[in-house]
Structures are given as structure tokens and as C-alpha cells.
Length: 269
Ligand code: ATP
Ligand code: MG
Image (tube, rainbow, N blue to C red):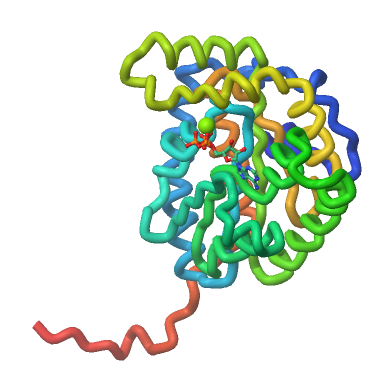
């Protein structure tokens, strides 16, 4: 069974996060995982070039996690395998007043990668059924209608050449505590510490429920969710890289045939 098969959430299944072990390593040890990740980074570089050359598909990678879950780490350790010229990373923060004056997908749609390119969402439209639900920023009816709206939006993208993969980096509450402590103990990490993260931590169970619903309702054939065991950073990075390589290889991309006769090209000395 491939990695992707082990970590994918089958459409229609009901997720219980308590049954997904954040310490899982699928039999790998750290050294093995790191050398495999190295090979995957090289392969990702080639696949991304092919994506660009073929110019038929784009890839959208959605990253979601609790605070300290490792979204930045995945971008640093996995996405750096790709050529920055074809990768666009977008971080979604609290919406601006202008963004709030539009539907919740307005800012998202604008950031979707064009054909041939890779887009990475550091947080995404899922915040609109996560933080927004947990903090009751809009009435229940409004956020509960969004799951279906998200599915339709993602289907529209998928029908227009966008391959979508969505990762939930799953850490335990205890692992988050350790990471927050590390941020406080290391002056070079103080900038990463936010008091807001402590308030959100108090709402851990509400967030887990909101994630369970989002993943259960929105893991579809055209835009699957993957739950990535993320307590061990080396395993998290490997698992994301594995799924990306498998996904891109699954597109069966080919270098385009040249529109000219190569044999007739004369290069002067
Ligand atoms: P991160 O925590 O993602 O690593 P950061 O620490 O640089 O990023 P923050 O300001 O802490 O930046 O994170 C972005 C904040 O914006 C989060 O608290 C997130 O919940 C919030 N946010 C994102 N999208 C929305 C939304 N649609 N509605 C309300 N809040 C949102
Ligand atoms: Mg933060």
C-alpha cells in the first residue's frame, strides 16, 4: 500500500482524530526518512519542471494545522525542492476589511495557481469553517453552508486543470505544549511566539471537532484530504513529499513535442 493510500481520507468517511496517531512513522526511522526525503526533493524538482513544460495542469497544496503544527516547516523542508520561479506561496491571515466585503472565496480564488505552476496555501479557505466556526464569527447557518460551497469551488478548479491536495498536519496537544515551551526558551524563536496561540490552545477540543468535520465533509475524489502524523518533523516532511511525488507522477505528464523539426535547426558556430 502506498503512502498516499495510507494517509488519504476516503470520500464519505467520518474522521475521528483520536484514532489517528500523531506519532505514527509507518516503520521509518529518522535516517532512512531523511535520505528518502532528499531523493524526493530531487524528483519534485523534475516533476515541477515537467508541470511547467507540459502546461496542462497546476498543483494546489493546502496546508492546515493547529498552531506550531509545522506548516512553515513543510514549506521550508519540502517545497524548497522546487524551483521558486514556478511556486507561489500564499499565507492567509485574518481577512482585511476589503476581503470581508466579498464572499469568503474571493481572496482564495485569486491566489489559485495558473496552469503550469504550483501554489501553496499556508492556511486557506478552510479557516472559514475552522477559526470562524470556533469563534462564532458568523452565524451557524453561514459557516455550515460553506462545506458544500467549498466542495463545489474545488470541483470547479479541478475541472479546470487544478490538481488539489490538502494536508492536515496532525500534532498532539502535548507536542504543541513542548513546541510552545521551546519557543519561549530560545530567544531566536521568541518572534514566533504569540499570546493568541495560548488562547487558541484553550479551544483545542473545539478545533479538533471543527477539523474533523471539515476533513470528513470535504475530502472528495477531486480534492482529497490527507492526515499527516506530524509529531515527528522528519516523518511529517517525508509523508508530505511522498504524497506530492505520487500525485504528480499520477498525472502522467509528458514533455511536449517541439513545434519545429529539431533535425533542421542549424546552430552557427
Ligand atoms: P501561522 O500561525 O499560520 O504560522 P503567523 O503566526 O505568521 O502564521 P498569525 O497571524 O498567527 O500569523 O496567523 C494568521 C491568523 O489569521 C490565524 O490566527 C488564523 O486563524 C487567522 N485567519 C486566517 N484566515 C481567517 C479567516 N478567514 N477568518 C478569521 N481569521 C482568519
Ligand atoms: Mg501563528
